[in-house]
Length: 480
Ligand code: HEM
Image 1 (spheres, protein in one colour):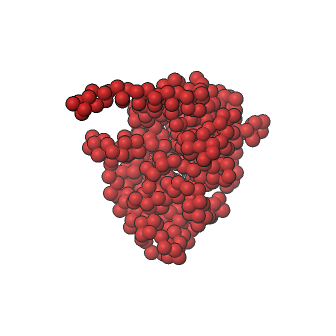
Image 2 (cartoon, rainbow, N blue to C red; image 1 turned 120 degrees about the horizontal axis):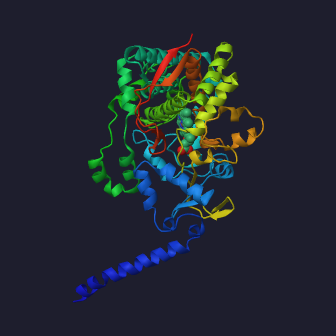
Image 3 (cartoon, rainbow, N blue to C red; image 1 turned 180 degrees about the horizontal axis):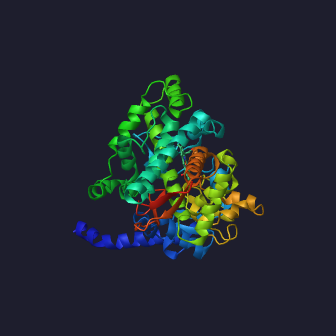
């Protein structure tokens, strides 16, 4: 009797509890922030866009409608200004702590530089490996010669493709180039040559065509249901990548400039867990392949468009490169402007980089945000502010050559993140991109192939975006 009475009451009790929950959410401090009404109550709409690869553009539309501060979910807020970037990512040096979202990026079940959450642990790790990526290290001939030789392999491969079938799929060959470039720095002499070695090419393909978005988000949001989601969307195994990383990390006498030599020495001197060296190396591999490859892919596709403007820009770039064959690649202003504009328009990590507001709360863009709130800036939107980048959707390298507004533009440019947790590999990435473009455009003209029918729209992954069709067919014509 008592049991059936209680069971009968259950729906009412649940309804009251839900109502109280809703009232609390509507009275919470974040409920007063700009944003669609439903984001004060639920994160479901945001989650829907995440699972369907559309988070970045959804948030961008919200910023266009609501301004630089937008509530995304009951506990999450997005900002889109340089001041917010400074506060969230640079205050105290490294900004606010990363959220558990970064646990998705552990490697071999080990936390790496990228996936370590507390600031203090991160600073300790960064101290012993940062010198390998400092500009002075990257500019050494043993690094640059390696990257240049991989750029030559890329061009050779593309010219062979054009001779055989009239086009080259730069999507995969740029991923090969990025893999070769980063493994040169990580593992030399155990780096890959994916644009000329069939075995390494298979490794590049395994890394480039992964599709782990749904299984990763399921793991993050619904660890209890991840078995079911994994059943329908099994995470793609990466046996070639794991095998390559484990074997290379154990290689003897790596070159002194490589990250491996530093990590092996550190492992010997301290009591690191056995999987630490391969885990850190795999992390840098993952950080350096899709990013550099996709940045170049979007950029070269843009330069190859059949428009007078793209032809003009490609022509200006070629002119600078041909007239200055012996000028160091980092002293070519137009090349620099083209790369920066590419990263502004098509940042390979355009998405939110989530951080926790510290205990006690903080003030961002004049709003008090309680401690524990997830906050972020998405680079895609920060880079499209019309007050800083007039005609933000237009690809205009010349904007970077204009002295007026230079400081402000650089303040808003955040393709490599910002602060102490910004990109460790940015100098390597810039060198790779510039050396590759120099190799191609000092001797070739590129156009979009008439057989190109793949979608080049940006498609969100977990934190990076890639060309949706994962294929980009260009024609390479020698001009000298
Ligand atoms: C165009 C190419 C690249 C872009 C746009 C890029 C962008 C970024 C961004 C935005 C972050 C911060 C992410 C966050 O806070 O969630 C990051 C972190 C990182 N990147 Fe890159 N990256 C690029 C290439 C590379 C390369 C070639 C490497 C070399 C190994 C690399 C290694 C790293 C590492 C290790 C971190 C973590 C740093 C830390 O937590 O201290 N990246 N990158």
